[in-house]
Length: 386
Image 1 (cartoon, one colour):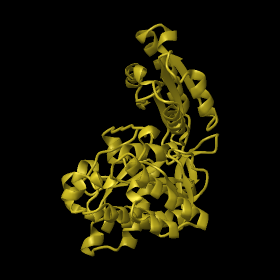
Image 2 (cartoon, rainbow, N blue to C red; image 1 turned 90 degrees about the horizontal axis):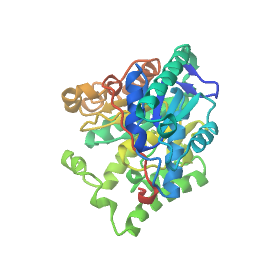
Image 3 (cartoon, helix red, strand yellow; image 1 turned 180 degrees about the vertical axis):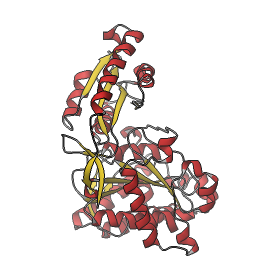
Image 4 (cartoon, rainbow, N blue to C red; image 1 turned 45 degrees about the horizontal axis):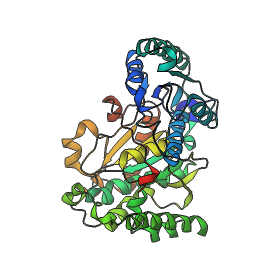
């Protein structure tokens, strides 16, 4: 199965062709945004960190930001630093060059001589990058080049019954075509760890899946808390989800029926094909960002009560099994699977339709989050993981 995408010189494939403006530290974020706002179609990627973190969290920030720039949807980037922060120019460039050879330029406010001079220079750099990017043309690519990140948020009972199950069927189809699908949200696998263990392609993969879920739950207990005090969320409970175990079993339906071929750390670059698990937080935005940093060019996000979450780099498709939600919140939802509940269509039929829609998005069709320019950014912190 084919689509038209962008083949990068580093071997990655993109479905978008973005030039990114990234603040190297939160202190330079407003200046970086001024630059992005002055160049049509430039993508501003907010960075909430870059300084004053412990070593582990600094490393995590760098892993995520370098992965986002390396994503196939990005042509090139401008990083706007301050000058005195922890993550300096050479650290950024070295981390990025380990993952990609795409054009990346770094400037700093202190070195350039203030806000206005930095903005003026930044506009020139981004304009030049945009001109270069405009020369890239879509070419025929195989669907096996796609990494589909799968997420859920604002779940209700229709999520597990319909949206997640349809997405699972689509995941099976993509993996069957040689592509990659990524399940995540470790806290929302608690109670389903035994099921996941049996689905490892090897006993070692199954054991790793089981262990990371157990470790996640234990991290709460070690801190004197019980995850069940906060998950399911108030919105989940109001919609009819009763326990974390119920939510988890519904959540993992997104992964379909294929065996898991690998387990990745938070934001780690995905370097194999098949069905993967990424060890992420249940915090939707931070989980979405991690999968995109890992290489996912597109996110399939299921929701029962609705959410507008989007990303500057990758389209986030919103899928719901709740027809009332789809009708009421239509300006932020893209695909309705509720006909699997009413019996009008089967899970199999809708799974095929969803894959066709994903191909349309890969070919350039914009999703609601893109139309509304929704861009959310969060990076999980190891010091408060899970």
